[in-house]
Image (cartoon, rainbow, N blue to C red; front, side):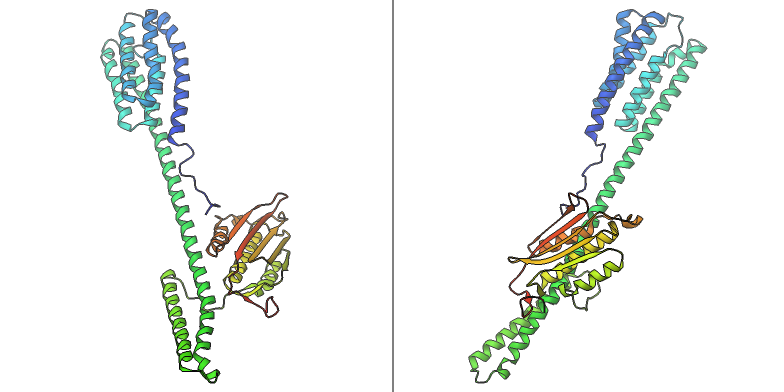
Length: 404
C-alpha cells in the first residue's frame, strides 16, 4: 500500500558517509600540512623540501585511506620512517614521533578503523610501530616516545573500532526493524483479505442459498410445469450447491489455521446508527447523514460499515473530542463513504500511536471491490477518509429504493 513506505537503507548509508569522510579528511590534511611543515623545518632541522614531502605524505594518506587503505598505510609508514631518519641529528624532542606524526597516524587509524575491517587497521598500526622500534634503542627518551606513540595510536584505533561496530549494529537494527515492519504490514493485509473473504462468503452464500431453495421448490409451487422446465430448475439447484461447496473450500484455504469461524451475521449500513451512538458514548460527537437508495445488504454495505467503523476508531484514538461527520450516499453506481473530523479538543492517549494498519485495511477493502480510498489531513485541520465502492447489480435495496 502507498500509505506506508519503508526506507530501504539507513539514514547514514555508505555513499553519504564516504563523501563526508572525503571532505573531513581533505580539510584535516590541509590543516595538518600547515602545522607539520614549519614544525619539521624549524624545530627538527629538516630541509624545507623534505619537510614538505614528509608532511604531504603523512597528511595525504588521510583522504587516500577513504578509497585505498593499503597505499595510504604504506605512504604514512614511509613518511614516519623518512622523517625519523632526517631528524635523527637534531636535539628536538619528542622524537622519532613528533606531535604532528602522532596526530596524523591516529587520524589515519581512525579512518581505516571506521571504513575497513579490523585487521587492515591493525596492520597499519604495527607498520608504524615496527619501523620506529629500532630508534627506541638509541636513548631512553626515544624509547619512551615510541611507547607513548604506540599507546596513543592504539587507543585511537580502538575508539574507531568501537564506533564502527556501533554503526554496524545500528544499521543491522534498522534493517531488522524495516523487515519486521514489512512483515507486519504483509500480515495485516493477509488478515484483512481473509476477513473480507469470510464476509463475502456470508453475503454470497445467502444469495446462493435462496436460489437453491427457490429452484428446488419451483416444481411444487408452480403448477403445470413440463419435464424440461423441471430439469432446468434441477440444474440451477445443482449449480447453486456446487458454487456453495466451492466457496466453502476456497474459504477454508484462505482462512488461517488459528482463525475462529465467524458465525454472527455481518453488519451493514442499518447498524451505523448503533455504531455512531457507541462512539458518542466514548466522548466523540458524531453527525450521521445517510443518503437515499442505500443498499440494504451486500459486500459493499458490509465494507462501508467496516470503513466507517475503522475511521471512527481512529478518531477516538487520535482525535478524542473532535466533531466528526459521517456521510454515506449513492452517487451514480458507487457507494461513497466520507468520514471527516475536526481538530482534536483533547490530547490523544499515550498508546494511541499506531502503524497505520487500519488505513491499510480501508484501502485494501476498497481495492478488493474495485474501488478506491483516500485519506489524509484536511487543509483547515483534522482528518478525512473518503472511500468509493462500486455497487454490483446484486446489491440488495429496500422496497422503496432505500434500506428496508
